Length: 336
Image (cartoon, rainbow, N blue to C red; front, side, top):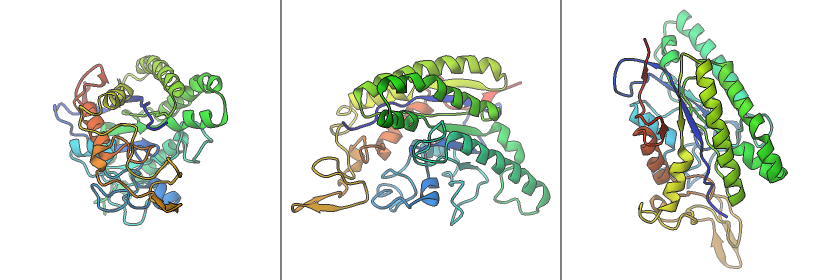
């Protein structure tokens, strides 16, 4: 079965100015491959072509034909695309934020990647401490964020799907369902470890119908915990971002939204021969692995990750506030 459907999200809006516009000074992202802009390529193996073909014209560290949701959000708030924290070769300035997300990452330790959310938060804390030290003791501040900007930045979390998918691969559905409270405990603990992580979005996406039900249960428990967390973080405004419903609506109405059959994807193959996106294999005279000529018409890019067109569709609904709870466009929150 194709297409991961689940996506849950939260938003904890940071201290902002009195402007009605999205004037965040910077963005800091934590997550997995859904928001990885190059961390996985720097830490492990480079993302191969044809990834990046639609927008960047070449691989950009993203497992997508173009831009991710976090890229569209950066565009909306008029900030540069995020450089990966681990990418020191040709990385752009970190003056307006950094991306700690890495493909395969999970909330809890273990799973597909060593870079779980706890590690990413620790990396951010080190990044912040080092930045403050350099800013205060060096004259060249051109590529460094102003330490005062950390408290008014936008913090995004796009993580959680790998906790559930790893569980489905190695345990039973009942065990995955039973693990939800512990996964969420690790998430809330990670946020509380760094109380100034004021904005987030994180997700879980699944292939199987039964896993959809588990992810929905995950969402319900998450929303309850976020409500409780808001009372303990008086300096943060927490918003639940229902990206699951947005993606479900997109997939359910794919044709009317201008997409082809949502069960089809553009790059790689799971039919006849399994070929990962970026590889080509000839079996009995049949070539598998070439990307389609119309990625813009597909919701799924490679059977796992969403296309740029789908990411744009979801990002638009995040930005206009239609999937925020309560509904409100993405903008800094005014504090006394």
